[in-house]
Each structure stands twice: as C-alpha cells, then as structure tokens.
Length: 129
Image (tube, rainbow, N blue to C red):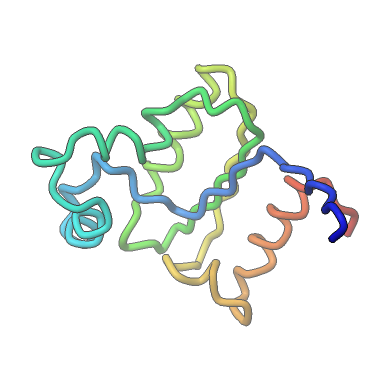
C-alpha cells in the first residue's frame, strides 16, 4: 500500500444567499432552518450560534457572496449586512448582486445565473479562465 499525498485545503467561502439563523422569523425560511438545526433558536441556541457565519466572524478566509435581487426567500439585505460585518472584522469579502435571478437560479447549471457561481469558485481557487 502506497501512502497518499494529502490534498491541499483551500480556505475560502462561497455563500449563495445563506439564510442566517436569526432570520427564522421569515416564514419561508423558518421551517427549513428549524428542521436542519433540530429546533427553534429558543430550544437549541448554541446550534444557531455555531452555524451562523455572521456570528463566527472573522472567518479569516477569502469570501465571495452571491445574491439575487429576485430572491423571495433570502432578502438582499442579508448578504449586504454580512459583507459589511465581515469587512469591519477584517475579512476579505466580495459581494456580487445578480439582477433578474431568483433563489435557486445559481444552483441550476443551465440557468443564466450559473456562470456567476462558476466565476466565483474559479476566482476563489485562483484558476485561470
């Protein structure tokens, strides 16, 4: 058996309209977040703190945020607030706003918004086009 060479870890973050745990007041997000974390913020507050990127700042990794203007699940202000908070903590973060795209467009490879996600990943990994 040969030894395997460890792969390099690239410390980066790509955020595609993440629902911050404190946003559970949003009717569209509340059920999904509560189910994912195993309860409401009142029942499992530590889980909410541990899974909220804004609560964990500074992340100390290069970050790309992608937000859609037509996203009915995650308001644009969430990403903008995160960008401001991350910069205040010294993180290197870049926010891209995609107009005329909804919540799921960035994860659909045949969507017109898909290239923005690809470009963000390539940028973070410092890959040539």
